[in-house]
Structure formats: structure tokens, C-alpha cells
Image 1: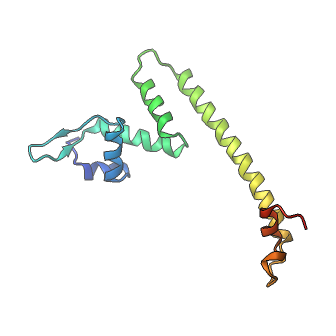
Image 2 (image 1 turned 90 degrees about the vertical axis):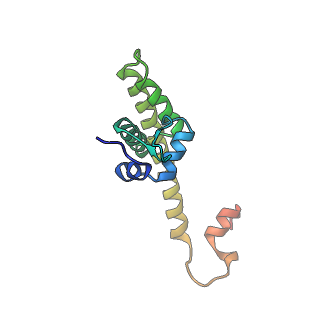
Length: 136
């Protein structure tokens, strides 16, 4: 693969140019080589790393956690168990978040069910009263 400009790297990886610049400033990507004209140029390793970051984000990993995963890929002593441990931790966080969202959903459904949903004044709105902690 020939070298890519930042615009072509962005198009190939599905992220914006500013995102790539942010990854460079944050240390996720090494400073790119530059052409005599000053244009940044990137190779396949950078394409792979940006795709790694994007895919890890789509799985719910934070940038801090992605940094940790990337450091494992550079560690010759690292093994799959270390990566799996992080994946299992993230999976539990997602399950916990889903549980909290289900509780929120049930509460909102209950509130919406008992709301008169008519033209009564807000002082009679069961949702507003609940949010204010009024038990009428």
C-alpha cells in the first residue's frame, strides 16, 4: 500500500481528519512522516491502529482502556488472558448498564402509564410531581 494523506486515511478508516489529529496529539498514533510539502503521510500500520481504536470504541472501551489494550499489543510478555480479563470487565460493565437502563425504562413506563396525558395543569401531572418528589 502506498502512503496515504490524512484525508485518505480518514476515508479509509471511517473517522474524521480531526479525530486522527486528536489521536496523534494524544499519543495513540505516532507523529507521521511528512512530505516536503508538509503533508502528513501514513502507512498501513496507522490504518490498522485507527481501525483497532475505532472497533474497540464500538465495543464500549474508553480511550483510556484502548490505550491499555494497545500497550498490551506492544508488550512481548502479554497474553490473551490479559486481554480477556479486560473484555470480561467491560462485558460486566455493559451488563450493569443494561440493568440500570431496564430499571429506568420500567420506571418511565410506570410513570407514563399513570399520567393523565390530558390538558390538566402541570400541578396535576404525575410525572412532574414524581420528579419533584411530591406524593399526591
